[in-house]
Structures are given as C-alpha cells and as structure tokens.
Length: 335
Ligand code: PBG
Image (cartoon, rainbow, N blue to C red):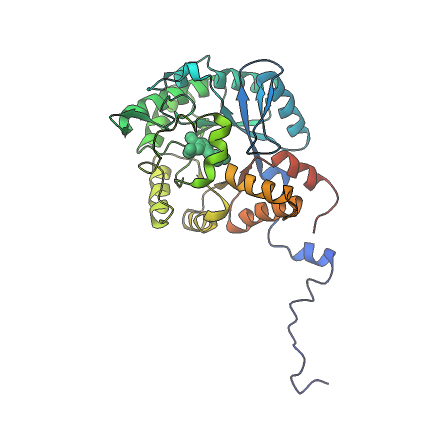
C-alpha cells in the first residue's frame, strides 16, 4: 500500500517496544559475577570507620571484613580487592612494612582465605600504603627510584602470595616489574598465582577519595606524574600493555574507568586479553554526591555506568558499589 515511501520500513523502535524484546536483543549484560569489590582494612577488632568522601564505604577491621565478605559472597560477589590502611607509625621511606609477612595485608589475606576459600583475592602491589612519602615507590632526592622499588615490590608480592593471594595486582607503574615479579613467583612455586597488571594507569584527579580512605593523601609529596600515565595519551597505553603481556601478565586493568572507556576498548580489541576496569573512588563519589543532592538516580546511574564498561569490552569491574549493585541485580528486573 505504501508505494510512496511515506513510511519507514526499518523502524528501530520495533525491537525496543517491550521489555521482553529489549532483553532478547541486548548486546551486553551486567551480572553479579562481573563484580569485584575493593575493600579497606584497618587494624583492631570490631572496628568500622566511615570514609566521608565515599558514602557507603567503610574501613573494616579483619573480623568485620570477614563477615562482610561472607555477605558479599552470599549475594554472588566472589572476588575482593584488598587495600590496607596502615598505621602511620609503620610507614618508612623504603616502605619495608610491605614485605613483612605478618603485616595487616597478609593477616587479612589469611583470615579471608580461611573463612571464604572460594572468594578470589586481588592483592594490590605498590608501596603507597607503607611509604612515608605517600608514593608508590621509594623516593630518593625527590626521584621515585625504579629498580630499587621493584626489589621491594617483589618482596611484597612474595609475602602476599605466601599468605594466599590469588591475584597479584601491581598498581605501582614501575618499569619492568611484571617480568621480575613473575620470575620470583615461579621460583617460589607460586606458578598458579595470577598477575593482573595495572598497565594503563593514569595520573588521575579521580583517586582523591581513595587517598583519603588510605590516609596517604596528607603524606603524598608532589604528584605521581613521573610514573603514572599522562591522560593525554592512548597509544602509550598499548605499549604498556604489550610489555606487561610479554612479561607474563595474565590480565590487564584499565584505571580510572568512565573517563577512559576508549582505552578499555582499544586494549580489548588490540590484544583480546581479559581486560578489567576500575570504577575508581572519584567516579563513585561523583555518583554518590549527585544522588545525595537528588540530581541523579543513584541506582540507575550506577547500573548504567557499569554496563558501559561491559559495552566497551571489559570482562570485569572493580566497584565500591559491588554489594549494593549485587542487591539491585538480584532484585526485580531493571530493564
Ligand atoms: C595506588 C592506588 C591508587 C588507587 C588504587 N591503588 C591511588 C593512586 O594511584 O594514588 C586508586 C583507586 C581509587 O581511586 O579508587 N597504588
């Protein structure tokens, strides 16, 4: 009847007309098994401190963290990323507490693996929780020294692997550390411990609330631009990733997340390796602050931002909202 071309034959809206249809044609989905929950641990017992710039995030003592991990696991969140808030008295210029086999991090790993052996643990490797200068590496005459830092990172990796870490996650951005850590893990018999490299990790303003949470912000002298990547660059991210894979990394983390979706996509398309992404503290804080003001719908903004990571090609996501989002995903349908 319509020989006049008055009606569109292709109507994109047909497929969008009903929830059942939208669900059938959805190209990407977010599921609870995509989520990794970053957590902050402090010394003490029965302890739980709010992090003011990250509403809903708490620093927990080991006993409380073990309980929280059990609740997360029951909701289907089966992986945690552990960050220790270290007593300032233990911080030194060389960050040697990082290599103490009985440090807060190692005690936490042992407690979590004992209570929840089926929950995977991503364990950060970098000196910032232990370094009195607040840097990820050792500072000498104002310079973050690479190779000496790597020696300490190797020791840190080994004590964490020994304590039961499933994934060693170097976030320090020193050159050459992946290969050297890999060799050390192999030599020590930790051949199945994974390495997730923060290869493309940018010198970002979005880490601010994390540094509050860790208490490393006050300590930080200067910035991290001599080792973290320049936000202007993206070819350089591919060089970082190529080297890390060559050196034995099993997976790659892109960080921050939302402002760097192009990097997630380029890394995944170029290398076709497991590419994870970190919705960092500042991204989380932005959503929470806007939602608290009634300017954004918290649940919708969280779900949409996480789904965007999947669309860009990420296989898994670090998010402080993991438990909250698991509850949403386990609840009635969102689409
Ligand atoms: C440092 C580290 C940082 C984050 C994770 N590991 C901060 C930094 O590089 O200063 C930030 C994570 C976040 O902002 O959520 N090793």
